[in-house]
Length: 198
Ligand SMILES: [Zn+2]
Image (tube, rainbow, N blue to C red; front, top):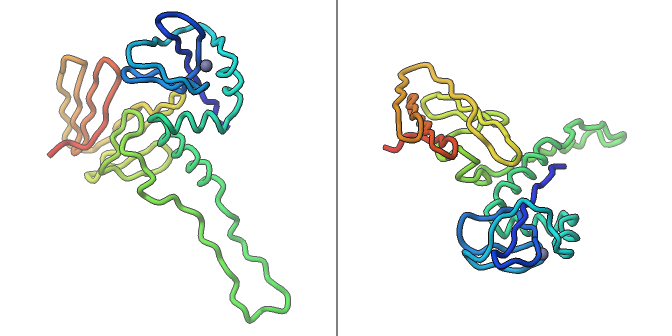
Protein backbone atom coordinates (compact mmCIF):
# COMPACT_ATOMS: atom_id res chain seq x y z
CA UNK A 1 0.00 0.00 0.00
CA UNK A 2 1.17 3.53 -0.64
CA UNK A 3 1.91 5.72 2.32
CA UNK A 4 0.02 8.93 1.95
CA UNK A 5 1.72 11.97 3.42
CA UNK A 6 -0.47 14.57 5.07
CA UNK A 7 0.49 18.15 5.81
CA UNK A 8 -0.06 20.21 8.94
CA UNK A 9 -1.99 23.44 8.65
CA UNK A 10 -3.04 26.01 11.24
CA UNK A 11 -4.92 29.28 11.44
CA UNK A 12 -2.60 32.27 11.47
CA UNK A 13 -4.61 33.52 14.44
CA UNK A 14 -3.60 30.40 16.40
CA UNK A 15 -5.57 27.41 17.66
CA UNK A 16 -5.35 23.75 16.77
CA UNK A 17 -2.97 22.31 14.18
CA UNK A 18 -4.98 20.32 11.59
CA UNK A 19 -4.14 17.87 8.82
CA UNK A 20 -4.89 18.17 5.11
CA UNK A 21 -3.71 16.28 1.99
CA UNK A 22 -1.86 19.34 0.74
CA UNK A 23 -1.68 22.97 1.80
CA UNK A 24 -2.50 24.89 -1.39
CA UNK A 25 -0.60 28.00 -2.50
CA UNK A 26 -3.87 29.93 -2.70
CA UNK A 27 -7.55 29.53 -2.12
CA UNK A 28 -9.27 27.88 0.84
CA UNK A 29 -8.06 24.64 2.43
CA UNK A 30 -10.28 21.88 3.85
CA UNK A 31 -8.95 20.03 6.90
CA UNK A 32 -9.47 16.31 7.53
CA UNK A 33 -11.87 17.24 10.33
CA UNK A 34 -13.99 19.04 7.75
CA UNK A 35 -13.25 22.68 8.47
CA UNK A 36 -12.70 25.09 5.60
CA UNK A 37 -10.08 27.75 6.27
CA UNK A 38 -10.41 30.76 4.00
CA UNK A 39 -7.68 32.04 1.72
CA UNK A 40 -5.01 33.95 3.65
CA UNK A 41 -6.28 32.85 7.06
CA UNK A 42 -4.06 29.76 7.35
CA UNK A 43 -0.45 28.70 6.95
CA UNK A 44 1.44 25.42 6.53
CA UNK A 45 3.24 24.54 9.77
CA UNK A 46 5.99 22.07 10.65
CA UNK A 47 4.57 21.12 14.03
CA UNK A 48 2.64 17.92 14.78
CA UNK A 49 -1.15 18.14 14.56
CA UNK A 50 -3.08 18.48 17.82
CA UNK A 51 -6.63 18.36 16.44
CA UNK A 52 -8.08 15.10 17.81
CA UNK A 53 -10.52 14.70 14.90
CA UNK A 54 -7.82 15.18 12.28
CA UNK A 55 -5.50 12.70 14.03
CA UNK A 56 -8.27 10.09 14.28
CA UNK A 57 -9.29 10.53 10.64
CA UNK A 58 -5.67 10.36 9.46
CA UNK A 59 -5.84 6.63 10.30
CA UNK A 60 -8.92 6.15 8.11
CA UNK A 61 -7.73 5.41 4.57
CA UNK A 62 -11.15 5.86 2.99
CA UNK A 63 -11.49 9.25 4.65
CA UNK A 64 -8.07 10.33 3.37
CA UNK A 65 -8.88 9.15 -0.16
CA UNK A 66 -12.05 11.24 -0.04
CA UNK A 67 -10.08 14.24 1.13
CA UNK A 68 -7.58 13.77 -1.70
CA UNK A 69 -10.33 13.52 -4.26
CA UNK A 70 -11.73 16.79 -2.93
CA UNK A 71 -8.41 18.33 -3.94
CA UNK A 72 -6.36 18.08 -7.12
CA UNK A 73 -4.51 14.97 -5.97
CA UNK A 74 -7.59 12.90 -6.85
CA UNK A 75 -6.42 12.14 -10.35
CA UNK A 76 -3.01 11.04 -9.05
CA UNK A 77 -4.61 8.65 -6.56
CA UNK A 78 -6.85 7.32 -9.30
CA UNK A 79 -3.79 6.67 -11.46
CA UNK A 80 -2.04 4.85 -8.61
CA UNK A 81 -5.01 2.57 -8.07
CA UNK A 82 -5.20 1.88 -11.81
CA UNK A 83 -1.51 0.99 -11.76
CA UNK A 84 -2.14 -1.44 -8.93
CA UNK A 85 -5.07 -2.95 -10.78
CA UNK A 86 -2.86 -3.44 -13.84
CA UNK A 87 -0.30 -5.34 -11.78
CA UNK A 88 -3.02 -7.76 -10.70
CA UNK A 89 -3.79 -9.11 -14.16
CA UNK A 90 -6.17 -12.05 -14.16
CA UNK A 91 -4.72 -15.47 -14.76
CA UNK A 92 -5.52 -16.46 -18.33
CA UNK A 93 -5.04 -20.21 -17.95
CA UNK A 94 -8.12 -22.10 -19.03
CA UNK A 95 -8.68 -25.37 -17.23
CA UNK A 96 -10.15 -28.21 -19.29
CA UNK A 97 -13.64 -29.00 -18.14
CA UNK A 98 -14.42 -32.72 -18.04
CA UNK A 99 -17.46 -33.71 -20.11
CA UNK A 100 -17.75 -30.43 -21.95
CA UNK A 101 -15.00 -30.79 -24.55
CA UNK A 102 -17.23 -29.50 -27.35
CA UNK A 103 -17.82 -26.21 -25.54
CA UNK A 104 -15.33 -23.50 -26.29
CA UNK A 105 -13.48 -22.29 -23.22
CA UNK A 106 -14.11 -18.71 -22.22
CA UNK A 107 -10.99 -16.57 -22.16
CA UNK A 108 -11.34 -13.34 -20.26
CA UNK A 109 -9.27 -10.47 -21.64
CA UNK A 110 -6.79 -8.79 -19.33
CA UNK A 111 -8.24 -5.67 -17.79
CA UNK A 112 -6.87 -2.52 -19.39
CA UNK A 113 -7.52 0.96 -18.05
CA UNK A 114 -9.25 3.17 -20.62
CA UNK A 115 -6.84 5.58 -22.39
CA UNK A 116 -8.73 8.63 -21.07
CA UNK A 117 -7.65 7.61 -17.55
CA UNK A 118 -4.26 9.28 -18.19
CA UNK A 119 -4.34 12.68 -16.49
CA UNK A 120 -3.28 15.75 -18.52
CA UNK A 121 -0.41 16.35 -16.13
CA UNK A 122 1.69 13.83 -14.22
CA UNK A 123 3.97 15.82 -11.96
CA UNK A 124 6.43 17.61 -14.24
CA UNK A 125 5.14 15.95 -17.42
CA UNK A 126 2.35 17.38 -19.56
CA UNK A 127 1.16 14.06 -20.99
CA UNK A 128 -0.74 15.46 -23.99
CA UNK A 129 0.57 13.81 -27.17
CA UNK A 130 2.87 11.35 -25.37
CA UNK A 131 2.36 7.60 -25.53
CA UNK A 132 2.98 5.64 -22.32
CA UNK A 133 5.76 3.13 -22.89
CA UNK A 134 6.22 1.34 -19.58
CA UNK A 135 6.42 2.46 -16.00
CA UNK A 136 7.33 6.18 -15.99
CA UNK A 137 8.48 6.06 -19.64
CA UNK A 138 6.81 8.18 -22.33
CA UNK A 139 7.41 8.39 -26.07
CA UNK A 140 6.79 11.46 -28.23
CA UNK A 141 5.45 11.25 -31.81
CA UNK A 142 9.00 11.97 -33.15
CA UNK A 143 10.49 9.21 -31.00
CA UNK A 144 11.96 11.17 -28.11
CA UNK A 145 11.88 9.10 -24.92
CA UNK A 146 11.18 10.77 -21.59
CA UNK A 147 11.80 8.92 -18.37
CA UNK A 148 10.04 10.18 -15.24
CA UNK A 149 10.98 9.11 -11.71
CA UNK A 150 8.74 8.93 -8.68
CA UNK A 151 9.69 11.13 -5.71
CA UNK A 152 7.16 10.43 -3.00
CA UNK A 153 3.85 10.93 -4.79
CA UNK A 154 5.32 13.28 -7.41
CA UNK A 155 6.62 12.33 -10.87
CA UNK A 156 9.83 14.19 -11.64
CA UNK A 157 11.74 14.51 -14.90
CA UNK A 158 14.69 12.11 -14.92
CA UNK A 159 16.02 11.55 -18.44
CA UNK A 160 15.45 12.59 -22.04
CA UNK A 161 16.79 10.44 -24.89
CA UNK A 162 16.61 11.54 -28.52
CA UNK A 163 18.68 10.76 -31.58
CA UNK A 164 18.50 13.93 -33.63
CA UNK A 165 18.65 17.69 -33.36
CA UNK A 166 18.91 19.00 -29.79
CA UNK A 167 19.08 22.68 -28.79
CA UNK A 168 19.83 23.77 -25.22
CA UNK A 169 19.12 27.42 -24.38
CA UNK A 170 19.92 29.33 -21.22
CA UNK A 171 16.82 30.83 -19.60
CA UNK A 172 16.28 32.97 -16.47
CA UNK A 173 15.24 29.80 -14.61
CA UNK A 174 18.04 27.53 -15.84
CA UNK A 175 18.02 25.85 -19.24
CA UNK A 176 15.49 24.87 -21.88
CA UNK A 177 16.17 21.79 -23.97
CA UNK A 178 14.45 21.17 -27.29
CA UNK A 179 14.91 17.64 -28.57
CA UNK A 180 12.84 16.90 -31.65
CA UNK A 181 9.25 17.63 -30.64
CA UNK A 182 9.94 17.62 -26.89
CA UNK A 183 10.66 20.68 -24.79
CA UNK A 184 12.15 20.44 -21.28
CA UNK A 185 12.05 23.75 -19.41
CA UNK A 186 13.83 24.32 -16.11
CA UNK A 187 12.45 26.74 -13.57
CA UNK A 188 13.00 27.53 -9.90
CA UNK A 189 10.50 24.80 -9.00
CA UNK A 190 11.96 22.02 -11.17
CA UNK A 191 11.22 21.05 -14.73
CA UNK A 192 8.32 20.98 -17.12
CA UNK A 193 8.31 18.43 -19.93
CA UNK A 194 5.88 18.86 -22.79
CA UNK A 195 5.48 18.55 -26.54
CA UNK A 196 6.63 21.70 -28.36
CA UNK A 197 3.80 24.11 -28.94
CA UNK A 198 3.12 24.57 -32.64
ZN1 LIG B 1 -8.81 19.23 12.54
